[in-house]
Length: 628
Image (cartoon, rainbow, N blue to C red; front, side):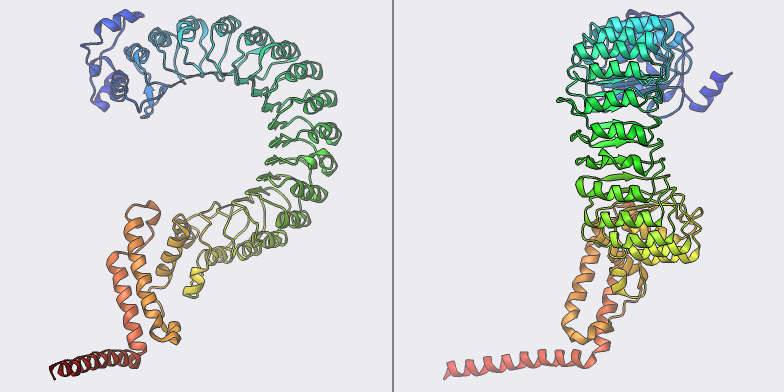
């Protein structure tokens, strides 16, 4: 009945294949004359099979799922997967295959053809393979193009892991191996580690498996020390690593001279002893770490002090994540302030307050490359923010600042004006979620941003921050001050998003933000036209008729910009103008000049006529002279 309903909905023809597993030769013999609409159960699948068969160069990625999306091959009834596997095996264009949903009976139909593919570079599997893994062996053994192999969130048995390890010994192209959120365990790591010695080209290893402990770390450290010269990324997030296992791992990591990224987050079993070993890694001659993730590791002030000794020597470090720990101001006062090349620093969800802000000012002075600073969910007050502003206004290249979930009020936000308006402000993104700053804070933000040309996106919740009509009016005025044409021109044309304000709450703000998504020059023009339907020309009369050509040229440029941008840009949907209306405005402006200065206009016309008469008179006299 379900198949009948599907046929009625899609209008496609299909045949229900009930026979057992078919081999590659079955499809090979029938592929030449087969009609795709007769062998599939969904019209979208027909289109994908046709593109695979024809080696469509635009079809390089496919998702196997049970959904109806254009990017997916839907797994329904019939022999869809058998034919899909066959054409996939023939494909020379396919680069990435993602398997999100499939039962073991159907997966074997796919793997039979997949084993003939030589073009796929990335295979991502999020299902449990079980005994069907043996059908994948030909693909893994024969495909020399495979670079990325991922098993995500699946149940991998020990026998399957042993088969993977055996195949890895025959692979020479693999660059990335991922066992994220699987049940690999220590026994599985032992098997994989034995194969790593034959994978010197491996660049990324993800073992964030939740259950790797001491034994796995000991074996992994030994394997890394013997044969992983190109390993650049190692992820061990969310495991059960203790100090003994971690020290053994660090001994191997010291021989990974190309290691650039290390994630140890959510490994609370690593204490001061383990962190002391990690600190020694940072001080080793060949350590080139650039990205270090130590989230949620129960790092308190004492452990931070141990860690800081090594961080002070790690001049290559660019990204550091210490969020969700237990560090106070004291823990931040160590070697962290000496990370002179740091670019991204995440200290969210700690216990930082005023003294930490002063330490961060020192860090900013020593780290001219700092671009992103995340301080959300700490104990930073108005005083702490004022300290930060002192540092940011003088020595700062920040483009992202996260201050959400702190004790900052309108007083603190008012101090940001000095930073917004300083010459070296580069801030593009500001996050203020969870701050109850009210209308006074909204006004302080809006006033502070006047003249700022860097901020693009502002994030907060108008409801949680208790902003009413007065606060909304301040942001509307910031984006477009309608009091005069000049003030509209000088308004903010760079902010493209204020996340916490909906179009329902303030349609004017939504309209102005939409205009700001155009170029700043174009946004200024349309705000003037939108806010001043009858532009006053009288202020220009003091320069008499000298400004009239400038006004005419301005309207001509507006018409040109309109033709070039409005018809092609969806960001101009709020522009209520047309070429005809712009031309009418131009004529109206010219008329206002004539009406406002009639004597000048008449005199100008009279002078032009007299000049013509005088020229003709001189010519007549000249002709008479020649005749004589």
